[in-house]
Length: 171
Image (cartoon, rainbow, N blue to C red; front, side, top):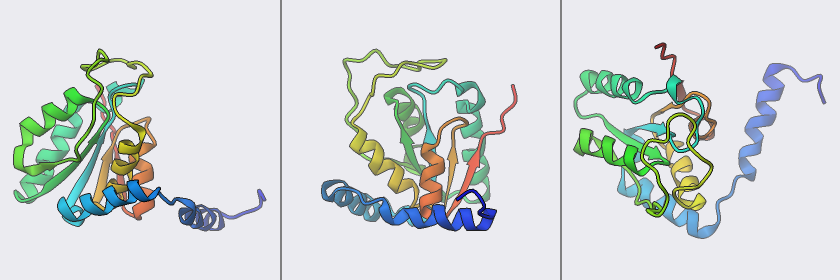
């Protein structure tokens, strides 16, 4: 029905959440990490690198600026990192240490990865089930900073009913 108002359409979309039901083994991981990582007291970061064609619109420096801004407001701020790239994960975990938390990932070391700028390739670096866990965990954070051109972080924020902040970075 195309005669819906904006509000009616949003209500329809929001009602679709009831159809998102992770399989039991995935839900078990979601529940475990939610508790272990204390996600209600974290800020979500979705940094997509493996195959995103618009990476120049969400560079690492944009995430760094926002992390620093949040830390300047509250030095005890913690961040949950969801990324599809081993190199990006290692870089941010090393740089922000105790301020950054993540799930355990199973990256495929046989793939040539690194930073695949621009656009990367379509090979998955980690199992889809782990990506779904990360997406659902983003929904449990306070807000999500996400990549321009990727719906992953936006979905997590929508599912959790929290704010989604997208890069407005200009080179």
